[in-house]
Length: 133
Image: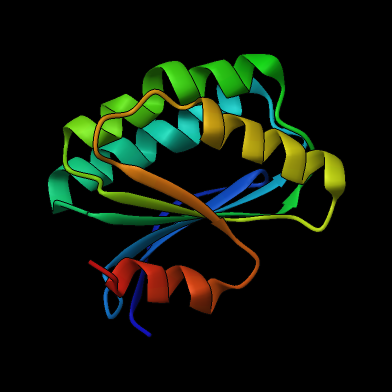
């Protein structure tokens, strides 16, 4: 795997897998709104510059998404990245029931055009989904 580090912080690691052509973000802990914005802004710039179509958002180490974070994602970021070409977001979900519930809530409330968002328990399932038409 050839990967390129895009962003690194205690709360989030973002890298691009050049072999799979997938942008990954691994989120950690209880996320503050400014942390989510910083990670998402780094991804937006990378997506736009490199014409990225697929993103895996790894929530396996995530605790809970606050209402403010949920609103930012559903009302701003999803439409922003869709408008620059992102086609699919695969969310790897946490075993933590509360974290999974907030991720599922964000994904079902997202008002997006043709971009698709789906949750998975395994990374390989995310990659397989990207290959589907």
